[in-house]
Length: 248
Image 1: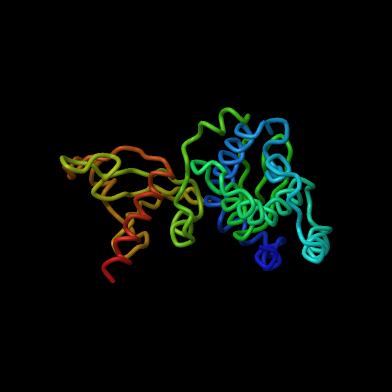
Image 2: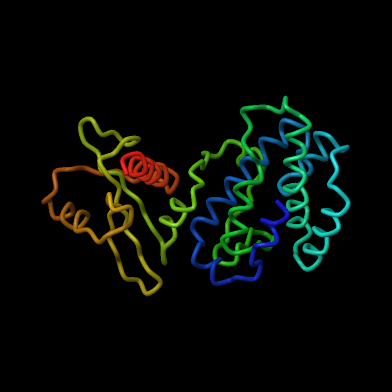
């Protein structure tokens, strides 16, 4: 885990902007998972950025040499809450090894946050969470605990969610293909210059231009569509990737 933290380019603002969409999803998923762990172990006052081991078993320690190396890495990083999560992530494997009876229904709390760090560094904490490419509201613990889970954490899937501009996703539905299992997905992307790009995620596993939405508006398509969330779009993309791997 220490090696993983050392490999992060904490000052790569370019990567933060390129991965703004996936970083926002990963941070929201961390907040959700951290809220669940906080509720389980009475750590509500420490949420959202905390070392879970301190609330489960404070006797779990990091070997002195690893701890010293970690502190050397962290001394230049801010805010303090970021340093706390890094210490927690390093202690997490030791906690798992020492406590086999941890709740099986609670997911790894730190993996989404580590992935976010790896995709462009840290964050700034104020009225909003500033991820150096996008700002998201922190919200309260209860609302985060009840948020929809984002479980598709594969880098290839995350990459497909990152593009310039604001995006709206749609699922193409018909008989036998409901919203949770659509025929396909498309998105309308408005770039930073205000230009509109309609794109379809194809079986080539990338986005390609499509006339579907324009033709539908003109009454030329009989296949219907409904708006979906980024999380639903990610699940569909992941399913296509898995099918591609299984058949290749």
